[in-house]
Image (tube, rainbow, N blue to C red; front, side, top):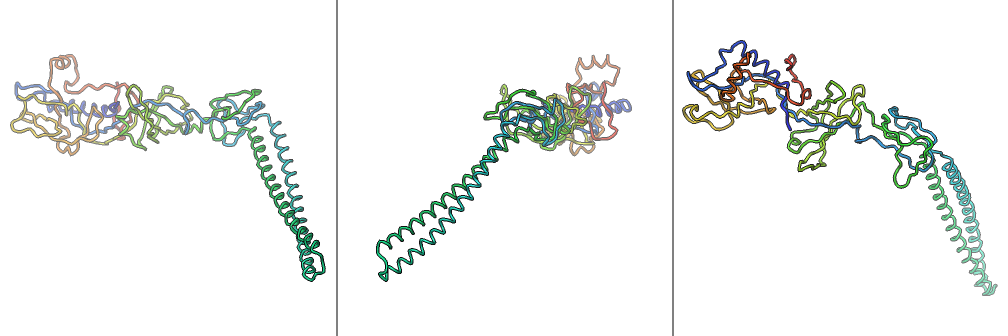
Length: 437
């Protein structure tokens, strides 16, 4: 739902009051003598701001409920180094799980690694021995072959030499395979050492971010049991010097919101305004009672860390602005003259406002609309209209009776604060008067 900007009403009201007080005779009240009486709105120069109003929730950056810090190993918590509201830095130790079992496992894995590394050396020596035996068998076979060709040795000796050569080759292949197996055992032991070292390191729980502890889930002496998921120990809100505000915007308004638009908001805990900008428009819609809404993320500075996670914020997102513009009450576009009051000739088609001429007759003026806050509308190419008064309706018995009891100027519209008091942005124009009760 869009809410008109209060600041514009202030400027328009003050400008109109001055016009009415200084030149009340120039503000017509009737047409021709005895003709109909009209109600008017001044065409003045002012700032106009269009906003989208919403409510949201303050939350830490990146995560709606803070960064969970969990235990990845089982064991008894023997020391908690932080408490609620403790300020922590990235890498700071926040808790300690009893490391006795994991330290023993780590030392055992390291010892097994040393055994397997020594076994590699043994297998490497076996390979060298097998290579030497193969070389001797090859030389023996060559000599036997030469003697056999000269018929100086028996066929049995030749077969024995050939068999020794094949056996030496097989021994070398076996020694090399054993060496590969020993090296694989070393790699396996290194992995076991790394895992045992990681488990030992997990006993020391560290903060993953800079922030403030907002929840403490375990106490000293409790035993945590980690299965597939890390057991939560703490929740840390990331650096609260900058916060996010998540709001839900109806689909009718989300098209007017763009990343980078300025936002002002208030929190019930403080009588002041905070400023931010639209950071993200998320596409994950939610439908509740046939109303489609979209989450919007606003990033804002948090001076003195006054805003706490979970606080409710009343937001005003500035979607359009026109400074020092010619504006008129939006009611002027809704006025439709009675047939008897129409001027002679054809009335032009299009968006128009009606001005009372010097002769008391209505004059239509085609205009182009700019920024509108649903109560006031900017007039584009409004040369000659500034300072005049546009017709917004006919006088009725009710309005006449009110004017008799009201000592103020009868032509000045009555301005009231809306329900979003204090949320709309102030005009940029310096020295603009503020609207009060």
